[in-house]
Length: 112
Image 1 (cartoon, rainbow, N blue to C red):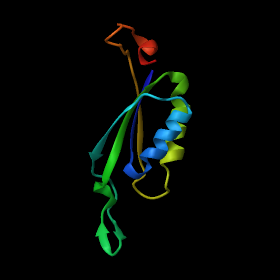
Image 2: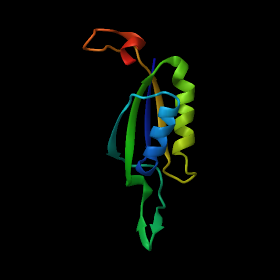
Image 3: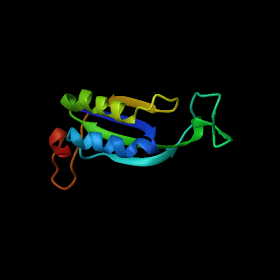
């Protein structure tokens, strides 16, 4: 199993959610976050300068089987892409075990 952590633009969340549902990744957690990035220049929107390094983002946490890893990452990459600085990051980590509290199932079955 793998844990996928993705930090994306809030404006792309609906596209990412639809892309994940389309590949049958129907369970994940998300929350709003603010972070600091590497960009130094900033942008101008309607005459007001702003930095994209501290704009609100959405953080997704998804645990998938090894077989779903590549298609899940591709779905996020394709649907979160704008081509602009600040599109986000994806981090993949191994997951040793998972448990469903109600039934005490463990492993991938606990995620279904």
